[in-house]
Amino acid sequence: MSHPSVSSGPSGDLVPRHIAVIMDGNGRWAAERGLPRHAGHREGMKAVREIIRGCIDSGVEILTLFAFSTENWQRPEEEIVALMTLLQIYADQEKEELREKGVEVRVLGDLARVDGPTHDAVERIESATRGGAKMRLNLMISYSGRADIVSACRALARRVRDGTLDPDAIDEETISDDLLTEDLPDPDLLIRTSGEFRISNFMLWQLAYTEIYITPVLWPDFTREDLLDAVVEYQRRERRFGRISSS
Ligand code: IPE
Ligand code: IPE
Ligand code: MG
Image 1 (cartoon, rainbow, N blue to C red):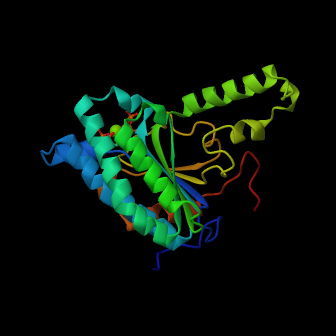
Image 2: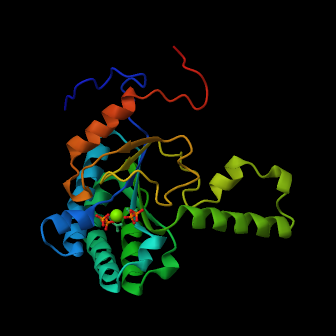
Image 3: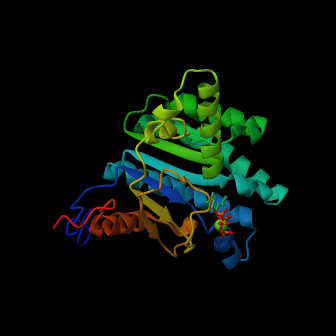
């Protein structure tokens, strides 16, 4: 598929290795149509399929999707139930195709808070896709960037208390390795849909030098072309990591 200026930017035609997405705007998509919020969430599943296929075809190695935040537990019970039910349906409908495509799925977050049937569906999709080598898909459920850092701090503090970790040996890698994303590289590109200019407690540590792309498109309307637009924009960026321009 050709796209204008795909290789004209400083990043050449480099495809981001790791893309993270804040999938936002389902409720507004539904409201615009006079539909209940859960209808927007259901429609959003189509966009999930689209972006996964687009990423596989573009050679993206890791895709991380923010599907439900710790703060989202404060939503009305019926919306939470609808979201968890959709997650179960999604997992069971897609696991076979994802396995065939070589996608390894991991669900990351505070899963102690999710109900039994959702937990079981998470187990099923993770075990069905284990070992997939083409792409890693992280579904962030009941996830909070701050909570993840807190839990890493606790784990490190325990090791110090037990005498197995020297506080002076703690470096950025030690902390990264104790986060839910463990040894994965940081996202190169963060996409947020629905035009909100905020991070909403997503991957606070890992986004330190991620390129951010915000689009007004509501998540259920997000297509493969929107993904390509984001990648093209990424390729136009110059990632300096605090240094000065190389040209
Ligand atoms: C994103 O859409 C999905 C979740 C947060 C679960 P929203 O439900 O936040 O939709 P808006 O932002 O209200 O439009
Ligand atoms: C962020 O969206 C969380 C997810 C996409 C899962 P929210 O809709 O919950 O975030 P805010 O409330 O707009 O910051
Ligand atoms: Mg929202």
